[in-house]
Length: 186
Image 1 (tube, helix red, strand yellow):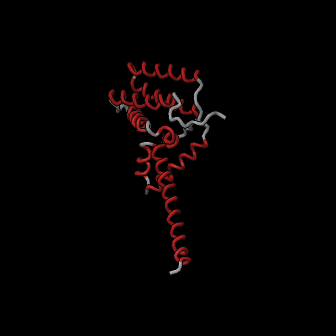
Image 2 (cartoon, one colour):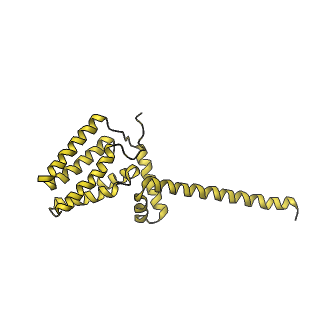
Image 3 (tube, helix red, strand yellow):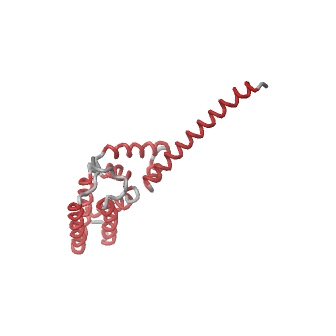
């Protein structure tokens, strides 16, 4: 076989292999990015989806929606007000635990709203929060579940106490502008 023929065979093979390697690297990089950004929420979403690709598509869709939101840090005066309000909710827990849990839920929702997160429904709140707060979403889910139980007066005092701890995890992260990827104000 001539050198020209060998080169005509080898060069396209090398190009195809290089393109496959670049494509695989990009694919793995995107997957790693999603895992790092969403934390435990990555696995949860992928498990709930029809396939890994469908789950990852959902997560990218969440990122796109999140990027279109006007998420902003709180001014220090608002942070101080929310901290005082949280202290009041904790004090309320001693005498009225169910009401305190409801108030904690409302306070977290109010804080989300002031930061710029839409608050139109719990499932949408979870999707929007998952982009920057995926590591604390399990706390929010658990607290919300107990809050629902308490509206039917079926939650134990220990469950209510746990709900307060769970709400506090997300509250603290939202209050401190947790997540670290918030955009600077324009």
